[in-house]
Image 1: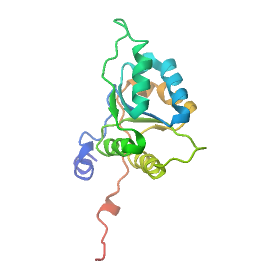
Image 2: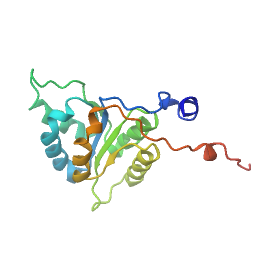
Image 3: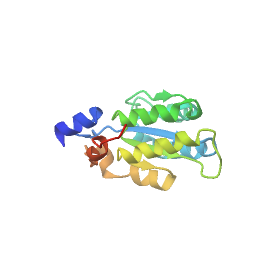
Image 4: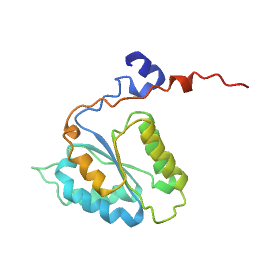
Length: 173
């Protein structure tokens, strides 16, 4: 997988190894932002050790929640990276970061009961997270399982599926 992975997936030259400090994307639709903030408040000590990447308003709310809890004894080790709001391209920015190997875990509290103007972007983001085999939580229970996993604090090499058959296929033009 080594050189072949680097050729086919330039962002995964290290074989896709996730370091002990994970790059965690946090996203929530409007009706679930409160739930995500509650989840952040519950797991704040665990999150302090990781790089957090958030879309739009979610990023502001996460920053505010962590600012209330951090102090000299428990500092935020990395600045929170804030992207655009989902409907303004934030979901696509996250998808690009996943494809470039810059996101290790996706926590996305999406609202299955509301239509969204950017539903196609949401679907594309979830598709790319599956394609690159990153741990993805779409609800609080799954997020709880992910954040409490022993693998969150260790290095981890996810299996990268070989798509060479697709990439090397003959296309009639």
